[in-house]
Length: 250
Image (cartoon, helix red, strand yellow):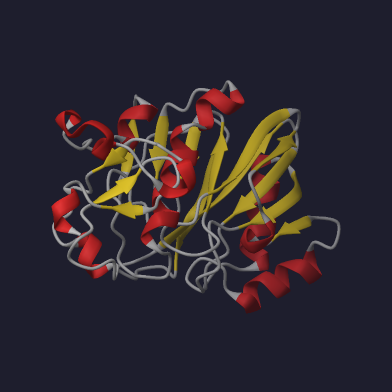
């Protein structure tokens, strides 16, 4: 797809070149410093050196959206480590919470949010969020690596990022370059239909006295597919615990 220009985002290319599920690799740069984002198969030390020279920056950090090998190739990762010994290599599994870095004095966030994989990280820089393989606007995923309640918690954490950081996100782009949305309202990417308010307390979670609001997943069969049984049809928006909207359905 043809991507718009993102200030400070320099796309090295899509790798491996020509594959239907190519992964984008970027230099996120400001004032002479850069972070390399995504280390897919086909990326080379030579290519990174050329991009750094072209942009006029030195490499400060290297990271990836998650550790699946199409995003973080171990051989390429190791080769880059030898070529750039002064750069800090941030494996996605080492990231927790909201990690704030600075690139040439410009803030950059690594936000931990397991949904597609156990070590998913969303990178936010210059108002753009690179979401890796996280599917936005749904609780489902193309795999079952992350339990459904954890996905709910992750999406709620992502939804709260602007409030926690005081930072506005105006654009999202996926690692595969097949989803790019500009002029977004961040909160609208994480809305889920709520259960019937007429249920009274049945619209609230009872796990450990949580009492958080229950939400109805909008993907048919998602609760059963996640192994929660036929009685469960809602999830707690706060803690992610499964529940049922009708006590008689237990």
